Image (cartoon, rainbow over all chains, first blue to last red):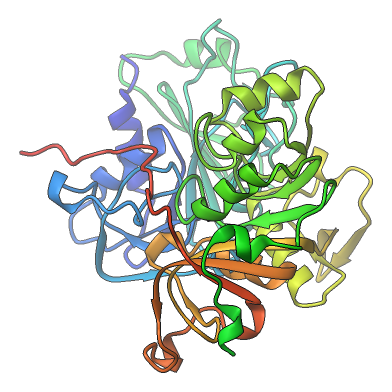
Length: 211
Length: 234
């Protein structure tokens, strides 16, 4: 049985270490925040200039001046700091973020990622994604194993315009987990969702990977 | 120094506007946008604008109002996903669009305001963003050259401001405002609360008055929320 989105997020959360500063992308990665293991203290960063994100507000706590990068209302915590966008991206581009968890349309076997545009369709923009993949120390991708039309998303080469080249360290899909120890190494299949066969993984993955 | 303080947006913008000009605006989404000054730009009739802003507002608010009135020729932005009219104008070729990675955009504005012609960054290496840009290797790492951005006019929104033009922003409404305030040939700030010089702790000022030439009390403080998300009570 494939992993649920929440199980995928929980798997990503297990990669986070005590004291990490982490940026979570929009979509499934936002679920990672609810799955941090007990005893692990993580500081979440939002690229619009907030370090130390709290939970969503209660109705009486809503403040239009406190939003996350997805433009959602959010709350602050004891120890939160606010900075300008330039300082926020100094955290990201300067290599100070321990990890970034984000979604992807495609990842290649050499760690390229495409998640910002589909040629011929309206392009919304890369926002902070190119800075995050270039700057955060560890890039963890959460994505479905195949696209809606059944095409593999972990590919030999990305067919879509890249967000970053050779930047992905770990891929968590609904069917499997792949990771590599460094960015010169090939990806290795680490885990398979319960009840999913290795043959299924092989047939639904275009990228080469070690088993 | 009190001549920095103007009664309203139209008097503060008087003599600054011309067709074809470049305007940089603070804000992220609809948070911390200079909503009073955007309204005054719309009323002024100025057009053929190049706008530097992280986002393009929404269909019926923020910079979206200038787009809807066909006043914008070119957007320099990082993300424009919340605006259908933008999409229509872009796909029909009426609007020019230059996408920048968000951190590159913030740094280009910061650099422009600081008199820095260009800088190298690893963001965008190996992507479409790098096309046509000079590349150098620093400590074994490929980086691309990005240039500083300046504007004929910069407009920002502050939370508190004093008569000398010192500004304080509030929480995530700070975002692009501090850099944008530095990049304008003239910078006009609107603030929610005008106070006397000395009322803001000098250690707490985000934008010193040297960057702000004109200041108005914000007449519009709608602070519209794009995505009101609440915690599930349990």
